[in-house]
Image (cartoon, rainbow, N blue to C red; front, side, top):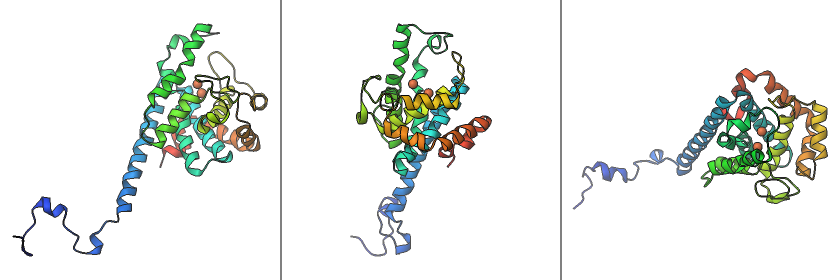
Length: 249
Ligand SMILES: [Fe+2]
Ligand SMILES: [Fe+2]
C-alpha cells in the first residue's frame, strides 16, 4: 500500500506531479521549442542541398541564392503573407535541384541541344519534385512546388504538367519570374548576359502568357529594389551566405 513518505522509483517520478507551479513548464513553450528546432533542421537541410548545387557549379549556386532572395521579396510585394514569403525565400533556390539528375553532356553542351536532349532536360522538374515528394514540413512542400512547377506557364503551355493560371502554385509563379529575370542577366556557357532594359522587356512581354500578370505587376512596381537586391548580391558573391538572411538565423 502506498504511503505519503514512500520514495518514488525513477519511473514513477517521471509522472509525479510538480511540487510547485514554478516546476511546471508551460506546454506551449516546450512545443514552441520543438517546432523551432524542426524549422531549423528543415532550413539546415535545404541549405546543405544548396551547397551541393554550389559544389557542382558555383555560378549556378550564386544564381539560385539570388533567385531565393528576389522571390522572397517579390512574393511579399505580390500579396503573400510574411510566413509564405519566408517559405518561398527558402524554397525558390531549390527550383533547379533536379538538374543534378541530368547528364553534364546536356547541361554543359556548348551550342544548341537537340530536341531529344531538350526532352531529357525538361525532366529536371520531375526529378526535383521527386526529391521533395511526401513533404512533411512547409519548407519541403514549398521546395517541392518550386522544383516541380517553375516551368509551368500561366497560359498552360509549360511543363511538366501543362498547368495553367492559379492551378500553378503561387510559389512557382513567383519563382518563375525571379528565375527568368536573373537568368537573362547572367552569363552562361551558351550565352552572354542581356541588359537590364531588355530583361525587363522580356518579362513584361510575357505577362499573362508565360507569367502570372499580378506577379509581373508587383515585379514592375518594385523593379528598382529588385535590381538593388540583385546587384548587392552580385557584389558580395564571395560571401553570399551573409547576404542571405533566411539562412543565417
Ligand atoms: Fe529549371
Ligand atoms: Fe534557374
